[in-house]
Image (cartoon, rainbow, N blue to C red; front, side, top):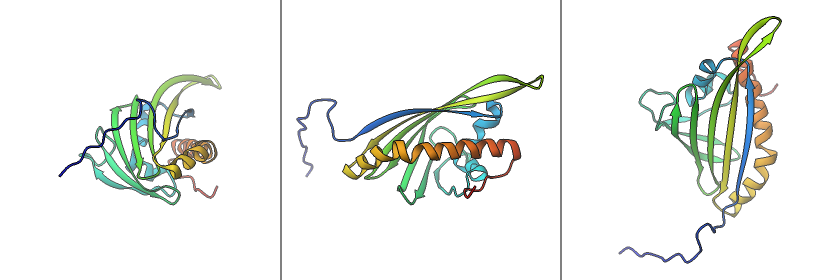
Length: 176
């Protein structure tokens, strides 16, 4: 027998703390070189310590509907789902860490030219917008602290690691 419970809270109410932030990374290569690296498999090339399990992908790489799992000490097991994917332009991912938080993460790539020593080169601005929503009181605490304490240094390190890889084609050690 299925029981239905009538929810009497007004629309828009709830207990999950939600915070949205935006971050722009400036990367040293054109977007057609950056975009393929925004993939769980290719992140193994440039993110020191990155491990994941592919759940679903026809190609084995990032694509619409790609689903994978990660396990990080401070988050536990999380499932990632690529909901939007436009090559060289845009990715949107939903990350669910059960009982802790849900993360909606979008990546927009915009290429621009810069002149250095009379040579014009392409750069990519990677604009990331991320919204974290707590799924429990523990998740709300995580969101309240991680969004300003854990996430910014992680983003700094990822930007440094990605630029290092784009220049050297080698992974930057996390101990640096």
